[in-house]
Length: 243
Image 1 (cartoon, rainbow, N blue to C red):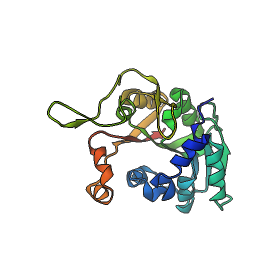
Image 2: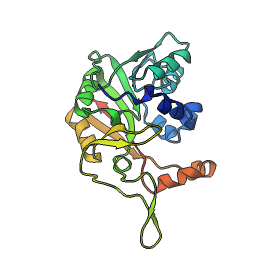
Image 3: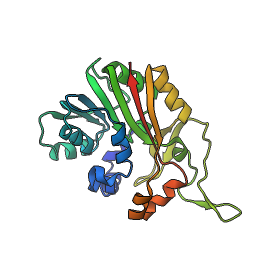
Image 4: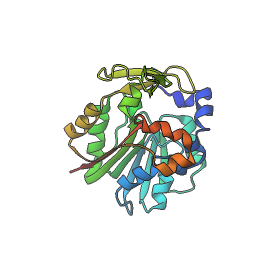
């Protein structure tokens, strides 16, 4: 079973105060780029893997999705999503993505935001998603960028010329990584960019768009702390199609 850090009281309390959880999708700087990757939603059946508080699930229904089925390992997340949703076409279930099995050919879109880096067996998950999509269906997901995941320190350091750098530790060494973020020992799984994309291709997906998210000048002006995202990518955004 995957680590259920989101039900740790200290972690959940800190996480709930993030702008993207307080403000919803408007608090996620990468959302406009993700939105541009999404297919037409009208009449589509959607699975939202790692649905969290249900922000994206509700947005997709508002844009015409026929139904949305959201999954999350966290009881706290699912409880909050259910409390904030008044739509019988949206259903939320507690599930571990390491063992989840979706019915074959049951969805037109599988969406996931910042969740797959918690999954141990990415290959199994991607092959299951491929089978769950209808031909022509889409997979759109975001993860922590592998370069960000491999960062050796939680802060900037300076080189000999005084320039700030973000050190990378063992990028080619894949596997478990532990970080302290709202709680100690948060477990994630590092995979290189090549492994991530080749796993999709090996499962039968055709990558359509790959974005290494960087904020716009307008976003940086509104939120100056985003300037450091210009130094190294924090998120990887991917869309792929099942033939």
